Image 1 (cartoon, rainbow, N blue to C red):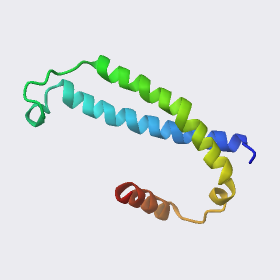
Image 2 (cartoon, one colour):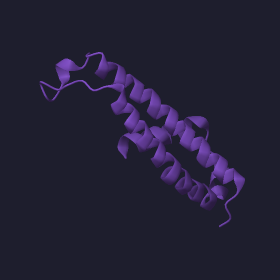
Image 3 (cartoon, one colour):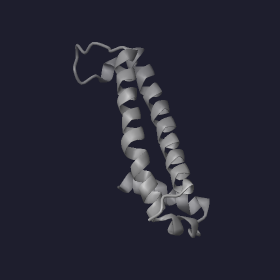
Length: 106
């Protein structure tokens, strides 16, 4: 198995996609949490609303996971399966359908 720059580039793109989607989702949750819009749905009645520091700590932890675990692992996966990825004949529609099925059923 030879790790090529293509494998690294694909892993970095996957990590960037995951990071962007996670930040967008977290911003939505943070907005609703800090604005008190979810107060009626709290599991703990007297829950104190946190601050942005709570979310920043989580972001630091997530960044460490992305850099030290996700990207190296995905680089190896892409290097190992590079021929199959390049030879894939699925259209974008079929690929998205597989993605959604894997996400919702997996």
